[in-house]
Image (tube, rainbow, N blue to C red; front, side):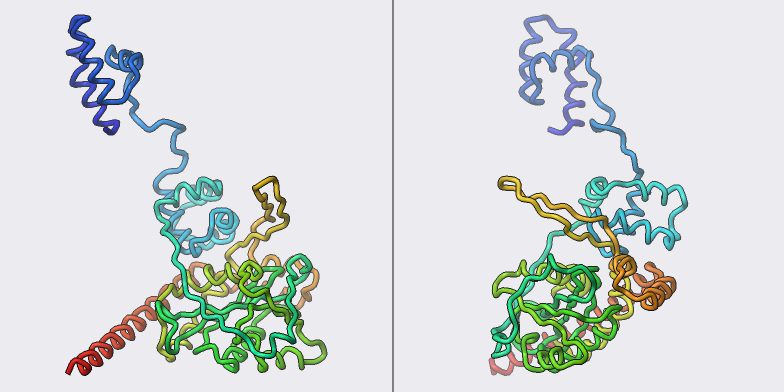
Length: 394
């Protein structure tokens, strides 16, 4: 029975209880304790009017109004549904561009703690989904590339982890689009491109395109053991360059945590954007790249804070992790002493031209158009399947 039901029941029997004799009070009290689950002494005090029913829920008064919560939800969705700790740091960057709230609401938003954000956003979050793996064994190139974990040695930008995400839906049969994700281990700077299938030449072209957009020289390249990366085309591209070849390393087979930085970005940078739909129309690949290049990557690199693991300590059966202060990849690049002043000035100028809400609006427009095209393509495929089935039945 809920609190309101208990209060109604109390009001119905209180007067009868107070006007009854001691002998008649006992069954009323027994029934009241049984129905409401109260202890006897507490029930007696309630029936005698010594305890008034609460007008609100227990605990401290609500600090932030529903209006603040509404704006928080709008900002959270606009900011890519990032975690609460990153959002606390990200609000400082986003609120100057937010025009739908007054200064009072903005000041309250800046005061909200990470734990309060988690509580307020809990009803709006949905469970995660899982994708399929399309990694395949490699050729002779595997023997030429050493297995190495270099996370703890990274002190400056330029060392990249790479991985692919298959937009295959529920089946890996046939041809479909694949997203390539490349993440800098030092700063978290991430670039994405889409390629049709995982053909070695096509993947290499997209990696070259990504490298041209990186704000730092490429020094190291780490990947899993899939043939889309460990092949002769990419091996020659990295090893034969002058004056300095790129250091190529690979992770241990079947150890996803070795590539943890980019595996995480596969979710935050790809799945949150395009979901788990099957994209088997090659004409959609250029649109995916336009979304990545013009909207999504700038939004995440310039306006989405990330946290870096500083220290990990085992205490008995528990592992205690300590993270640094949330910063955007752009801020980490700008703070690095290894990046030339000219590149920093270029990045600063680029950041001054960007508006996160404009990027989000453009992104939503492009995604809306993209979703319509996906729906049309799915209907076309369904119609084709129905025709084939009808012919087989004939």
